[in-house]
Length: 137
Image (cartoon, rainbow, N blue to C red; front, side):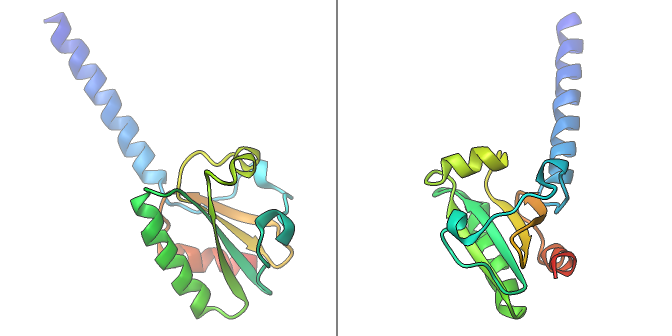
C-alpha cells in the first residue's frame, strides 16, 4: 500500500508541474534580468527594424519553431517597420548563454533601439505578439 501512495503522490506532483509549465509556455513577459539590456545589429547579425524587432531562437528539429517562424513572419509583414530575425541556437551558443535562453523557440521583442521589451519561451500566440509590439513601439 505504501508503494501505491508514493506513485499517486509522484503522479500528482508531475501533473501539477506539467500544468504549471504549460500555463506559462509561450506567454510574453518581462524578466528583471532583461531590464535595460540592448542587442544591436552586430550582435544579431541582421539589421534592427525601424519600429521593433522580433528575435527568434530556434533549433533544427524543433516543431514549434516552425509555427513560431510563420507567426512572427506574418506579424512582421503586417506591421510596418517590424523585422523578424531568426537565430539558430546551436550556432549562437554564447549569445544563448548570455541571454539565458533555456528552450526553443524563445522570442525576444526589441524596441527600435534594440532594448529587450519582453520575451516568450515556447510558441507565442499571434495576438500576444501584436500586443507586445504595442509596448515596444
